[in-house]
Image 1 (cartoon, rainbow, N blue to C red):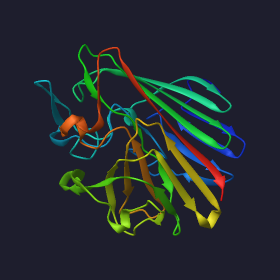
Image 2 (cartoon, rainbow, N blue to C red; image 1 turned 180 degrees about the vertical axis):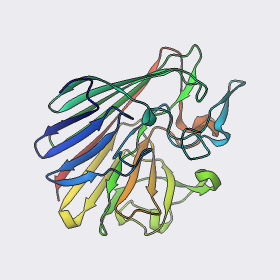
Image 3 (cartoon, one colour; image 1 turned 180 degrees about the horizontal axis):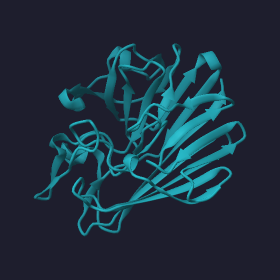
Image 4 (tube, rainbow, N blue to C red; image 1 turned 135 degrees about the vertical axis):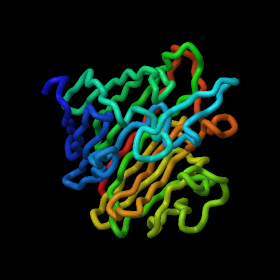
Length: 287
């Protein structure tokens, strides 16, 4: 295996993961033959998970104002609003790889599509039936900018899949797939005690998350336990209209459209040369 390879396979025990330079993405993750992260996303539908950097989700008007200066971005997909930053669309460099670990890096310079100037680093490692996703970003601009991180996994969905996750509020969705107002959890989106996923389209942000979630696949007697560092106090839940075999539970350090929210919705204003980092672990076990 060479560092110039377009894909990398890592494994530990029953856990196997295939990675790609393109998008710094996971193409598939399996445990004992069960694909728990399935290829369903990205520009060509082949990504099973991808990093969100330097922000996640959409920015209204493809622009934002910071400290009196207005910044403009261009759409980067078929969506009319810029989506998920740059990391998922650009080739990353594989800087280190071992049997159960891979390190990837990305250098993005400001261009006509985005004013962001940064480097990102992602370490994916396997141990004790767990997949660790460490992600960091460093601002290289000569001014501070709002940054956020996250992961966008496509989990397998079966008819009996149950989700356990505690959150304080859910954000309604308005036109443009943008967040509207936050409010109490409706019954079909309250996963505090565990519940099956609703049989409808869902694309909602949740805040006040404690950083823990559990996904149960009773048909396979398997459980995934998700643990995120405290910087992640929000998550997105996405149930696509045209797929019933996958769903997205996306830990994020900020709310979608945070660029237009008070206190930037959890986005961190970091100075040139400064960094933020995050870590998310997914552990698989027999139920």
